[in-house]
Image (cartoon, rainbow, N blue to C red; front, side, top):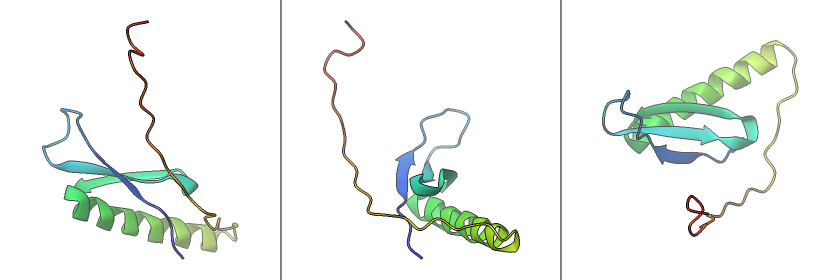
Length: 80
């Protein structure tokens, strides 16, 4: 199974420097880890546990459809 993962640098000061979020949007899952590599490993661990729990409970496992992303730039959004 393949799922899209987005990585986002954490700027929250309660986290140590260098941590990243790993978002799996199609399953609404998020975790974090040190660096992109650490966040990726945390996402794999979370996904394995999530899939194992779904299977154990006889629940449907969503298969991701095509996924696209874009960035939106809004000029002066905070000043109007």
